[in-house]
Length: 93
Image (cartoon, rainbow, N blue to C red; front, side, top):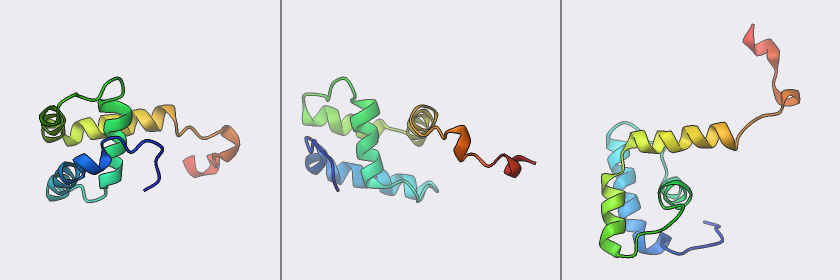
C-alpha cells in the first residue's frame, strides 16, 4: 500500500479488517480495507484523528456502510468528474 502518511494504518489495521468483514457479511464484499483507511483519513478524521486509541476504535466500530457510501458519493461528485470530451453521449440514447 503506497501512501505518504502511514500514521495510524498499521495500528488500526485489525479494526479496519473487522469492519471490512462486517460489511462483507452485510452484502458489500467490494469494500476493501485500504478503502476504509482512506475514508477515515480523508473524511472521518480529516481535521483531527482522535488522540486516544480507544476513541479511534470506537469511531471505527460505530461506522456504518451508509457513512461509507456517503464518502464514496462525495468522492465521485468532487474528484472523479469526467470531462465532456471523455463522455460518449451515444450511450444515453
